[in-house]
Image (cartoon, rainbow over all chains, first blue to last red; front, side):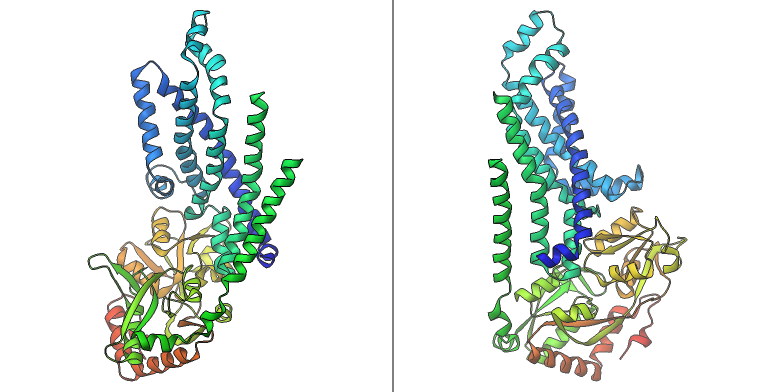
Length: 213
Length: 278
């Protein structure tokens, strides 16, 4: 393992960088998109609810690899020239956003209906009540499942390996074939993923504790 | 702080687990078993072959059989070693999985468009070469890329396959180009069609097969390396290696080799059958 780490340090650091970058971008956008579709799903407007439902069911029920390949192979052919990293990150964002939407929706629905009614009765508009009263409470409730989604997101970023996105998994395949030492190559990359996921999981726990008090 | 210590402990724990697993990864007993004796007893040789490489080893979806030059050579060698009733069993491999599968004992030998290289020869033993390939380029017809020199520019992307020797070669011949490694040739071809790279590089034998399957794409630039294909056998399996080499000589002497070569490459445009015949 020491040999792999010292000999392929540059490749590993490059992989770590691309994995982190893809994860941060996907985390940011999937949270925004996911929350947006979660709100669609609880809106009184029936058309918006249907749009939210369709989006979530499409991206939640198609394998991530298929979504990523779609953006890598089909989109450059007919729509826009995007490279593997971009294609993989877009796929990862849309896929994760559907799971985050379901999580946020569950959070919103677990907030007592009286909260919304009370806020409206006090003269708030629907959007004021949603953004100032309901969503803050919902987010507090869903921190543990959101932590799960974020950790899954980091691990799912390994899909970039299949679209030549230069992430950790891509480097792992490359190192394994160069060094011909498959077991140690994947072990080392497993450790590198822990470097991202362990602090993330620690931070989510910390957040949960802090907000509980 | 306490949490941080615990986190570190988890990391260290994983590291130890990894080390101990590696220790048992190198199974001593396997290399001591004689594969040839086992194969004679079961009357079967298990070969690792490609299943996505036209002309060498391609899965025929109609009957679920892998067909190609490598497969036929493997069958001919099996008959020479085990006799007329000898059975050849085929396991699909990729450039990435073939060496681990051989080392684990899942397959007895690899005949999967595998170039003989000094680095690989440290891990496995090679038979004599059974096919002389050379690295070349596949591009869209009418592409400005005419030879490997046209690729040596910043910003040019070249497609290859992880684990293939050609990826290491192209980095030498076109150091300025960016190499994108995909998991197999079918994927690399799809990426070429989507315009993810200017050219696809690997051995010409494989590229000719892709050009046959994909009219509109053509092999350019001629071969810029020599890539002799060999059959890989585990270290310490000298008896099997000797038998394979003997069988290779026999099928070349009795014309079986040329018959198989003609069957697969006789009609391939741009392939010099007479030069490759033995």
